[in-house]
Length: 562
Image (cartoon, rainbow, N blue to C red; front, side, top):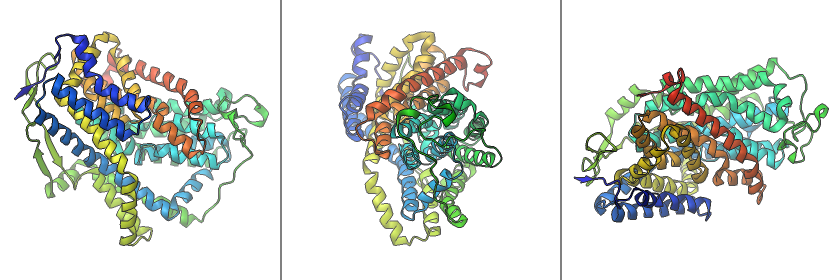
């Protein structure tokens, strides 16, 4: 048995500075030295191992096995999700169905504001839920450029829209990772995040249109904006609280798309804005600054396709929704686990490392058991969905095998990054490094709910991933909350909810946006526009978390409140 040490240098300031080195290496590698994500993650992991062994005195065999444990968890279940969802996307793209899907969305309305609302918010949320990791910004940015939006508008507005869905992106991957590093119940975290983000799911669509068209332009289409936001927020709350994190965005986005589409069949704004420069003819000069930044044009007419082709384009994603929804039902997961699940206690780690006071009331051994639930894993449901959809689209088994190999090559560095990030997170957790940081961060006292939210924002802004931020800071948030008598579930959830507002300013997303819109070299312009939006929304989220921590009736929303 090895007991964690939280002040190895006998000086809280020095111990905290040393404990922060792995995170500084990772964030500086990405944000300052512009390293590839997997390179920075591996450098951060190396630093974490060195600090764990030589500063905190963790036995080398325990440190090594902990790193392997984290890497294994990164590959399955998390990497397994990413691999198979990108596989499905590749299949639809090769058959041309993805282009039809784009056109079917873009052809619903000629009004630029409504196109932006439908594509950047509702449709983008669907791809955040299904794939995440930059996919929605790439997709919506490319579509908006195709419709005639300026590169700055297409890039910046896609980034603003891709906020509220992020915490449940990639079929709940950030929440799954958060549960792994904190040890808190997955469904509790899902429910708590689902009691924070719906407020912003209603606010963000209004914010998005105001950024493009100004307040007056936004006010003219407020009924449509409200429909899009409310029909996203309500399913987001219901699914996250009563089902789990896996299909929150997919269900909410589909509801928003359908509701807005049906609404636009019976309602049209008084004035149709056909210019993509953010100003209607009668309101020239009255639009938002980003809308006027580029040369828009007249109305863009999306190609029309036979109804049968549009239905075929949507079928793969409907199959995905149905199969993954069934996969997430507890009874189904229990049945699949009953067929096959393998459990591996991690040698040298399981029940052989203990947390001690003041982090816990009494010494407590840490469990470390790797569950190889290969059959019930969400990624397996996605894989089955992809195979079924592949046959429906007319792929042969050999053609699907070739596409799968191409997908594996495409995401190989993403898988390495995920494995290294989870490995780093597990090493900091089991070595007690996160506890050292948490004890220091708890010194912010009663303001901690606000600053803890910004910690999540900073993590996403610098790592480019809500998943990565949760892995880095999730356990720290839990420890700090416990030290201050706050709900650990509230603050762990705040890390993820605050993090979504940092998504629009992270380097990875901005590069994806500039690439998708073919606006290379203008990343600084995009960052300058979205930064204030990101900061303002993060501050509002911090105030909400403060209210949930201290103010009735908001405190009644909190799971695990003291």
